[in-house]
Length: 172
Image (tube, rainbow, N blue to C red; front, side):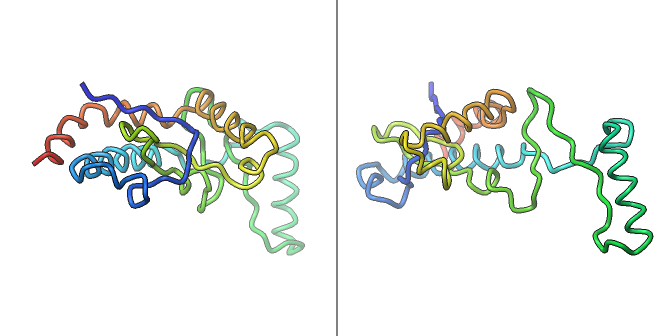
C-alpha cells in the first residue's frame, strides 16, 4: 500500500534540488506525478469569488450598495458598483477573492527530508514566514484554514485511487 502525507510545513526542497540526488529516477517520476496531480486538484477545488444576492446582504451592505449604484448613475464615481463577495461556508473549500490568489499559486509540492514521501501544501509567505516564532504563526493560520475550509485533504482523496497506476507507470 502506498501512502502520501501532506503538511503545511513547506520547505524549499523540490525535485531538482540537492535533496533529490539520492532518489532513483523512478521514484522522482512517481513523486512528481503524484505531487503534481494532488497540487493541481487542490488548485481546482478552490472556488472563484461569487457576489452575494440582495437577499443575503445585511441592511448596511444593501444600503451601501444602493448608494454606490446611485453615485455611479449620477456620475460621481467611475467604479462600477459590485455586491459584496460571498464567504465560503465551513466545510467547503475557500473562495478566491482575486484573480492572482496567493493561496492558489503558492500551492507547491516537495520531498521530505527522509526521502520517503512528498509534502503538498501552501508555501508560507511574508510576515508569516518571518515571524519571531519561526513561522509558527503562519503555519497555524494555514492549518486553521485547512480545518475550516478543507481543500488539500479532498484533493488527496480524489487522487488516492490513481496512485497505484502512477507508480506502475513510473516503474516501467
